[in-house]
Amino acid sequence: MNRRYFFLSTAAAAAGVRSSALASPNDTIRIGIAGVRGQGRSHIREYAGMKNVQIAALCDIDESVLDARLAEIEKMGLPRPARYVSFRKMLEDASIDAVSIATPNHSHTLQTVWACQAGKDVYVEKPCSHNLFESRQIVAAARKYNRLVQHGTNSRSTVGLREAVQHLRDGLIGDIYMARGLCFKWRDTIGRAPEEPVPPGVHYDEWLGPAPKRPFTRNRFHYNWHWFWDYGNGDFGNQGIHELDICRWGLGVTYPTKVSAMGGHFMFDDDQETPNTLVVTYEFNGRGNRRQLMVFEVRHWITNHEAGIGERDGKRGGNTVGNIFYGSKGYMAIDGYATYKTFLGKEQEPGPARSEGGSNFKNFIDALRTRRREDLNAEIEEGAISCDLMHLGNIAYRVGRTLEFDPVTMRVKNDEEANRLFKRAYRAPYVVPDQV
Image (cartoon, rainbow, N blue to C red):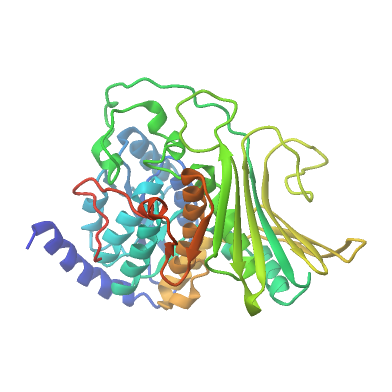
C-alpha cells in the first residue's frame, strides 16, 4: 500500500475517534486553516474569537503570506499554530479535528475529499466544486467517511434570511413565480501580465493542484485566478454563488429543466477569460408541478440599484448584491446576507422586515459537538446543488445555447459538448477520484 495513503488511513481512524468524542462544550476543537491570504483571514478571525476552539495549524503555498498570518495570530495573544505549505502534510496531524478550506475554487473538492479520508470534518468555502463531477464526489466523500462538511454560503446561518425564507414558505408574498439574484460589483480591468519566474517562497505546483501546468503570471495567481476557467468560475462562482443559493433556497427547488445564458467580457482588452457581464435564466418544475423562473445577473460596471438593494444613507453608488422574489401578493428584497424587506399588495405597502446576522462558522463548530449532520445550516449536499446550477449557467454561456437538463439522469439532453464540460482533465497526482 502507498505509504501516504496508509498514513492517512491510520490518521483517519485516530481523528475519527477524537471527533466522535467531541460532545462537551468544554472540549477544545482544534482547527487547521488552509488558504489564508484572502477569505482565509475571515476564517482566522471567526475561530480566534470562539471559546474552546484552537487554531492548531495554518497552511498556505505562499510562505510570505503564511508567515504574516502566523505573526498576526501571535499578536492576538494566541498560541502559534503549526506551519504547513502542504495541505496533505497538515492532514497527517491526527490531533487536528477539522479543517477550514479557503483555497482557490479548483482545489476545494480534492482537498475536502482528502480531509474526509483523513478523518477530518470540513468547512469548505464556496463554491465547493469546480465542476459538476466534483459536486457528486464531495458529497460522496462526506457520506462514505461520515464527516460533517459545511459549505461557505453564510446566509444560511443568518437570523434575517432564515426568517425571510420561512415567510416565503408561509406564503407571505403568495405564489412565487420568479426569483432574481443580483451580483452588480465594480470590477476594473486586470490588464495583461507577462510570464515570469515563480516568486521565492511560492510553492506553485501545490497551488496549481488539479489544474494544467502553465507558466506563472501575476494575473493567474492571487485573487485574479477567479477570472480564468482553469481555477475559477467568474463572478458567478465568486460572489454570485451566494445569491444563487439564496434564490434556490427561497424558491424551494433543486435542479432546473432548462438553462440559458448570454453575456460576455465587455469594455476591456485584458487577460480575463470569464464573462464580466452575464444573464442566466433557469426554468423549474416547482411544487405542484408549477413552472418557476430564476434569473441571475452579473454586471461589472456602472449600474442602478434595484428594490433599494445596495442603497446606503441615500447614496446611489456602490455594489448591488442581493435577491428579489416576486409573488402573487407582493415581493421581497434581500440585501446582502442578512437583511430583507417585503412590500405587499398592489400598493406595495411595507411588510415584515429584519436585519440580523449570524455565524456559519459557529454553526459548524456547534454541529461538531453534537455530531448531527442535520444541525448544519449549510450542509454540503445543499451547497453542491447550488454550485451545480452555477456550473450549468456557465456551461450554457460557454456552448452558446439553451441546455435541456434532465434532473433524473443528471445530463444535458442531446448535447455531448455540454456534457463534456461536467468534468475536467486532472493533472496527476492531483486527481479527484472516480471512487472516493
